[in-house]
Image (cartoon, rainbow, N blue to C red):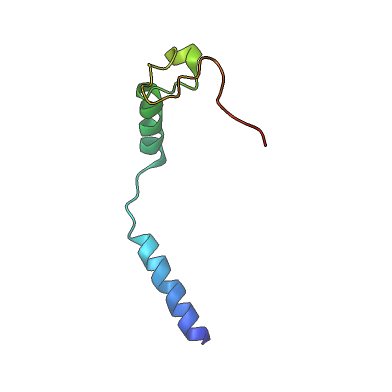
Length: 68
């Protein structure tokens, strides 16, 4: 029982060892580039107002929510 658990753990560690790795500096650069080029409309001061969403509900200023 104990040997089986050790072997399973060892195989999981081997799987993790085979995962592709990149240096932290490369990952940081990719993250910075992504945040510079991907518009996030939750930050309107940076990216401006979001474009018109044709699927958004047109309720005329109310959220259309009801409280029960």
